[in-house]
Amino acid sequence: MSSLTEAERREIGQHFVFGFHGHQVSDEIKTLIRDYYLGNIILFKRNVESIADVHRLTSELQALAKEAGHTRPLLIGIDQENGLVSAFSIPGAGTQFPGAMALAASGSPELATEVNTATGKELKAAGINWVYSPVADVNSDPRNPVIGVRSYSDDPTTASRFVKAVSAAFTAQNVAPSAKHFPGHGNTHVDSHLSLPRILVDKASLKTTELVPFEALVRDDVASIMTGHMALPLVTGDDTPCSLSRAITTDLLRGEMGYEGVVVTDCLEMEAVAETYGSEGGAVRALQAGADIVMICHRYERHVGALEATYAAVKEGTLSMDALKASGVRIATLKDKFAGSWDDVFTSFPASVVALQQEHQLLSRRAYAASISHLPNSQVFAPLSNVGLAVLFTPRMESLNRAVDDAEDQLRDAAGNLRNTVGPSYSAFAKSIAQRVPAVEHVVYAPNEEISGALAENLRAAGSVIFVARNGYEKGAWQVDLFKKVVAAMGDRSSKLIAVSSCAPYDLLTLGALPIPAIATFEFTVPALEAAAAAIYGEAPVSGTMPVKMTAV
Image (cartoon, rainbow, N blue to C red; front, side, top):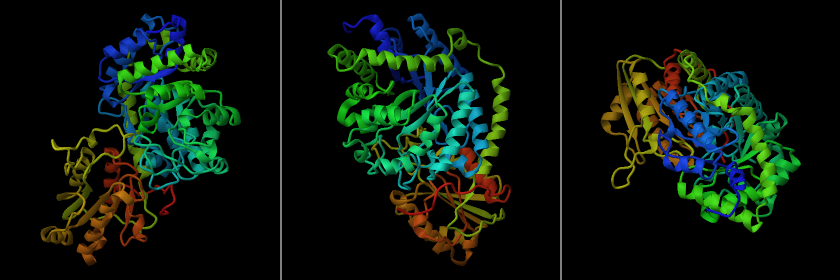
């Protein structure tokens, strides 16, 4: 394997966090914990069944680490931002709560505290002690394909208020938060899962916008910060991804901002890093830059390759073992605070979880109801009639982005073509509407959709028409094209029509002032759309406020 001592390899293992596939402890992860002394694990939706099963899984992982002679328990983390990035929120596991922008629309950091306190309790009950949340990015570009509604706001002060509340809530539940994606992934229209975003802002601009929420969290001693894969050439002088840049991790975050907690990278299998450096080379560069922990989420050969590349760098003297040991002290401190002792991690599954989650369902409904917002460029909202036919338009489901770990994007046929598929969330929305009206015609629309004569007749005869868009700004402009056709087909009956923005609220931005009312849900999760149905038919007020400016780029 290498000529390093066992103590050195044990040290190196603490500086990685890896994922694996399946609901059982895989042979690969056993090898990594036992033979490579892997110190940290990330779980995904692919690992989650029931909350009790996750508790069993985390207990088995911890038992492996103890048997392998680890001096401290594993940090076991998960992407649980709530909203669309909710790896833990499946039936039988975690409660589905609103995500960042939806919570910000409530206007209440106190509600964000309640929600994330509840999430923290559920994670801790399952044996998860590290959460990759809050998202501290300021979403200043409406075209952003990967952050969007995962951000609280395009206003740094608003974002700061909410990320502070979320971080404190997790910390109070003894789950380590990790603020991301430093130094800010909001001002881009490129997805770092696919290629490297270049953000052309200087340090002065960075300090007035992107860094503001992170600085607030540094002052609060946030447990960990995740670095992102974007280039800031006007700050660093080159196109090195920030996660691999010493100018960012060591000089800016540690030096200028004074951060003393744990720095973890985003996943190095993302193409922003992998296509140029490889996950293996990227791991060494990230550690050289000053990262404490390197994340590689998926492939075993890349896990082993990154470890072996790190062994080689230490042997060659290009990576300092003394620096790794100093970094290891930060990791040990984090583990002592949030993972605790072996006695702390080997606990029975709490029977109180069932009653707790019943309470959390009530909180979830209250939080989603508070998030539904009126689009400021639309007409004054008035509830629709529940008499007669309801016509519901929803866009076909397709992959949103690679950060959304969701089965709804698995929609290609054998030839690789996108199916014109409704998706389970919009199916649930149709069922929710059907509970309120005599009949529903559900139209799942695709690009170049036309209004048939029969559909036009139904639109004019309907008691209510609901047009749903999902990220219809720019690349999704085909949705706006059909919306205009629907308005034209309805003519003077358009008072029966409402638009629903079911993800980023910029869907209809290019139309200027809308001739009809429109509301935003900020996500297409089932409870968000159920809250929308209640609002549309007058069962609940539309009380949220828009947390972003409605300005085209």
